[in-house]
Structure formats: structure tokens, C-alpha cells
Amino acid sequence: MKQKIYMILSCVSLTCLFSWWLWSAFHIQLNKLCSESSLIFAEVMQKEKILRMGRRFGNYDPMSSPNKISGTEKEEWCDQDFLFYKDSTRAFLDSLFRATLLEHKIQANTALCCIREGCVIKTSSNDAFYEEALPLEQFVYRIDENPDRTIMLQAYIKFPFGTVWRHSYLMWGILVLGLLLLGGVIGGYRFWCKKMRKIAEQELQQQQQHELKRQELLQKQEELQEKEKRLPTPDPLIHSKTISWVELAEDLIFDKEHGDLCYKNEVNIRLVENSLRLFYLFVQVEEHKLTYEKICIDVLARSTKDGLSKTDRDAVANAIRHLRKHLEQIPVIQIETIKGVGYQMIIYAPTIDEKSH
Image (cartoon, rainbow, N blue to C red; front, top):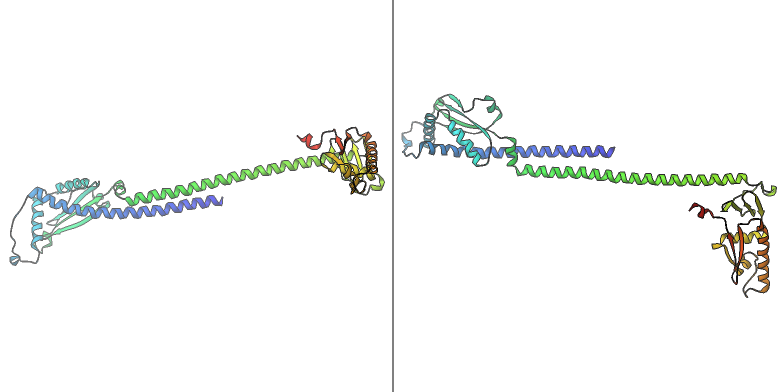
């Protein structure tokens, strides 16, 4: 849950950060377009004079001027006064301005605001447009010091969002970078969730396997306890001792501490001395095989440094004979002779491992 909250906070933070960057880049590009449009408007005003007036020639003597206004400014005032005479609404200048903007691949809505002889002239009747649009550089022309005779021209421009977006490489770069980072965060979070889900599934499987093994172990313990309940009561002399049964095969269990061998809860044999040691040794070794030498050393405690004598072999045979006699009541156990090697105890009943397979 915490990771999900962190991911949401990261996405929100990145979104806010890149939104602020986009907003800043938008205004940077907007100011750049305004500056470029102001230069274009100045060029359009000169272009209008050429189209509407043609070339002019004249002389100006500043010494005869009644004021300090430059001759260039007075000449510009005269030109604008003549253009107002030709086009009192200045609609031609406005349309020429829009056409020139389109030549520079700048799509925008424009309008002019002019003041001449104290009268305000607007090329657009929509007053709301002048409030929403951006004012460009103002051009003021004077002929004398009388403010009522001042001519003022100012263009207003409104850029659609798409125009600003198309001209801003910075906004495109910020957008691509933001999408890549946002996609990386979301993709990383999804990858992490997938990995955590996989780990959780593996842990669940392990828990299920452990639980299954535990149930199997409990079931086996219950089966052994049930079999122990059905066993005959042990000898009073060993009643106080702990009995630890080992299951050798199906229905065949053995208590090495006391030498008790029980088969099908019907036959109970107690092995003692050499018979017990010999039987337990058979149970311990691989494939239940014993050599003459091992029986002599581990069961009969006889030394075989000088090799097996006839007496040693007779003693081994005698121990095997006594054990076979004890095991006559259990038909699933047989002791076979391996000529020249020793003996092998064979249990014909299926073992625990064989039964599980």
C-alpha cells in the first residue's frame, strides 16, 4: 500500500513539475512570438505606404521648423494622415498584417486600435477581443506639440494555443521528456508489482508444500502411535523405560533398545546378546549384507589379524543358526548364505520407501 502511495505521489509530483515547465515554456514562446509580430507589424506599415502611396520626394528645412520635432517624424505623420484619408478604418493595414503573419507561418487573430484627431478607431467591433488579446508595440507620430493632432497606431494579437505549441521546440522537448519519465515511473512500478506478486506466489507455494509435508509427518506419527497402542504390553522390568519402535517394513517393527521384534501385532520376539547384536548389525548395513570378518569383530568380538580360522567360521555359523531359529516365526525375514563372503538378511515385505512409491 505504501509503495502505491509513493508511486501516486511521484506521478503527481512529476506531472506538476512538467506542467510548470510547460507553462513557463509557453509564456517564453508567447513573448517571442509577440516580439516577432511587432517587427512584422513595423514592416507591414512600410509595405502599406509603398502599396498605397508609391515613392515620394521632398525637402525639409529644420531651421524653418517652429518646434523641435524631427523631420522624419513629421514625414511619418504626414504619411499616416494620408493613409487615414485613403482608408479611415485602417482595415487594409489589418488584413495586410494578418496575411504577412501567415507568410511567416504564424496563425493569429489581429485587430488595430488607432487614434487620430482625438478619435479612437478600432478595426474590430468586439471590445472583449482587445481585453483578451496582447498589445504590440505602440507607434506614435507628431506634427506639432498639440496632443490632439497626434496619430497613434497599435496592433492587438491573439495566438491560438496550437500556434504557440507548433513554434516551441522547448515545449515539445519538455513534453517528450515528461512522458518518458512518467512512463518510466509507471512501468517501473508495474514491473516491481509483478516481481512482488511472483515472489508472493512462490512463498505461498513453499508454505503449502511445508504444510503438506507437515500433514504427512503428522499422519505417519499418528499411524505409528496407533500401532504402538496395539502392541503387547512390555515386560514389567522394562516398563519404566522408553520404547522406540522402528518400522522395518509393513507390519514389521523393531525396538533396538530392548530387542523386541513385532510382526503384524501377532508375533512378538525378544532378541538378546549375540542374536540382538547380529540382527541390529544386519539392519544397519547397506543391502543387509555382512561378511564373516565383520560378524567376528563387531558381534563376537574376535580378532581376525591372522585371518579367519575354522573356529571363527564355526562361531559365526553358530550365531547365524541361533538368529535364524529366533526368526522362524517371522516368514518375511530370511538369512541367505553368500558363499565365500558372508550372509545377507532379506526382508520380503515392502519397505516404507517402496510403499510410498
